[in-house]
Image 1 (cartoon, rainbow, N blue to C red):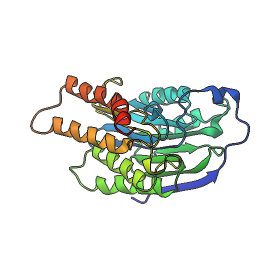
Image 2 (cartoon, rainbow, N blue to C red):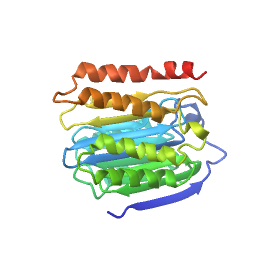
Image 3 (tube, rainbow, N blue to C red):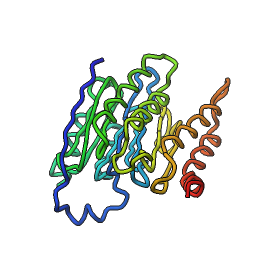
Image 4 (cartoon, one colour):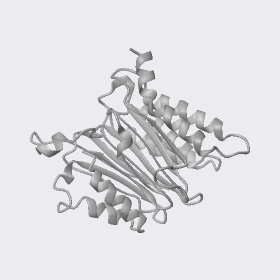
Length: 277
């Protein structure tokens, strides 16, 4: 399917409201992939950022769809998006609701990406005109890639290309495609502020239709690495490969095993940074 790529460059205004300046863990400098699989009805997200906790941008509605709220990361918008997806709203309807100035006076500093089952040809993104630096979005069938403060538009376009190339192989699960896309974005430079490190935090989440929002089938989070330390996308790949090994054979990974991988991932930042200091 022919992808649609939108690209623009802008700078944050010199004056930003004191409310936005006081918010913690803003997910500036982020690239993410939101996607759904109509065959398995899985939904998932992967993302990375030069911030300590990019995981916070993700919102997931099992059996329905996914949303990311990045740049200034309006968490209220993320909650509204999840609620609307659970109610069966289209990605476009959700975007219209949360980038309305009556809902968010600072909508020009937000970036969103939404994908939903049943709307595979209608993924939606929004990128505010006042977001700093290189920012780009690209959409394909059942997938949307978005990023800001990037090294260039190829971070997003290559991520989409990698996702779609992996989709041609039937054995590539949604999680495999999300990982391939995230790694492709990193290979093209990733976050412009992190240099060779590419990012400081990264994550992947995939939910099956029957999962609870709080305990998705796959959830691996690599929290903030120290500046100049370990590459979190590489750490994420190691944890993901570990998860795949647990899943190998003719058995399912138990919930306790999945939680063990997640717990070790959430504390990986301390171990990784100490080994790189």
